[in-house]
Image (cartoon, rainbow, N blue to C red; front, side, top):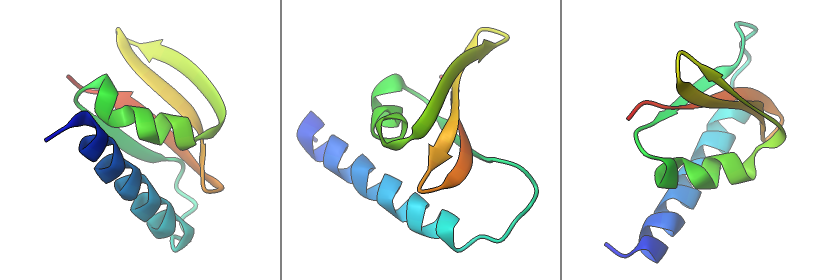
Length: 77
């Protein structure tokens, strides 16, 4: 699968996550989105607002909002 197709597929996933987040009525904190490699998380991170980057135990993460909902994105691989 080419990188362009992968990027489009992941962009669709970001859109679906956003639609799903809009339907949640939880007051439990941010939604955690995990990815194994940086290129698969790039579309999610690019779509986030109020982005803050950090590291916890050498694991990179990004906090912000996605479609108005609080999210944390982290790399696992």
